[in-house]
Length: 458
Image 1 (spheres, one colour):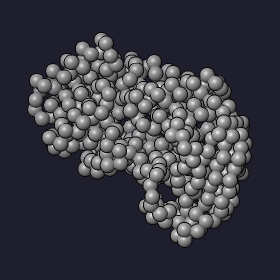
Image 2 (image 1 turned 45 degrees about the vertical axis):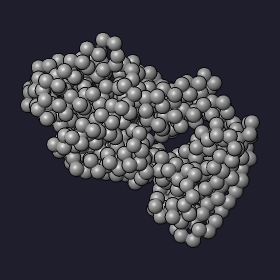
Image 3 (image 1 turned 180 degrees about the vertical axis):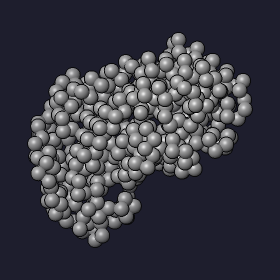
Image 4 (image 1 turned 120 degrees about the vertical axis):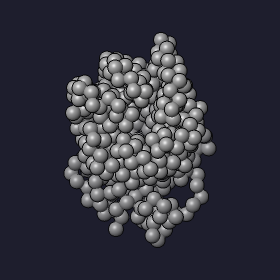
């Protein structure tokens, strides 16, 4: 009985390195389609991509990912023609259960993906619900140029760095120039825009407004698109509309229960209103679906940090760094947890590494200031605070970050003054108002719960 499946990275057999994004994009699309099937556990893209070019045997890979079968094959794009060859292999016996080759025009690639996913379900004797069967069958033709730009956008955005986000944004915009009615591209653009706000790359109100408009357009074009509900939930929960954000993320999970990012972001929304047990369950689900993703482990580290389980958060951040040491957010998250545990030397090294990798965003510098305050060096903390405050005149520096640093220094009045500025600027960090340990010094103030209600976190 096959209940868990991994779609291994399709091989690019074109001998053209520039086509890697196409093979990777086809892999991701197949994973997304198959993940809609509730009776089947599908390993997410990030985890299977770790096996790209790896020479391990299929039974060994299946054991590591804890799946019953693997789907492997190749993808080739020649002009406007697509050839996809796939085979389904039993993990236990290493026996080929089914194989097929598909030749299609590029504009029919979405229909091909749906047909292939439905065939896999049939071959492993998984009963599709009527809704699932309809979703897989009703796939419109896609503009080839727009689809290729969309694949490049998602491929770039997966890097997580400020530079990768900007590249992904450019490709998403190009896709929409070619086909303004392409819902997936609108969803990709929405994700790029909200990440720009959260990473401190652009004024939050401006980027959040652009993200919201893009997500709304995606949903108008395709209300059944789980990716668009994830985008909208992500945006709403970070812009003062947590209840609506929770609803959108829960809808995304219903539409595509195998979408690891939906579970991870749902967990973030849940712990933001102190529903920690439910949040950790959702986060664990995301890690189970994407066990080799540094982003899922970083999200788990965050969840345990805000639940004040600092040792567990350290473990998950270290797992993230082991999977990919290039992500600055995992290093600064680890530093924050080490700081909370009083391990100041380790925290300093991780903040410095985060700053080196971040490409100039202010987050790691805020961390170093918090560390200075925690270790008793108030002079250094206030020096960094003044530097960051002054920097707002010429770059994006979060009012939320300044408010939280004032809280760490015991400046209650300044904390509330800057929190009001953060509300005016629609700072994404406000989602953490109820749960951030660094705000403990201001929680007994009469202004605290009215502010919680004002930003929709009640």
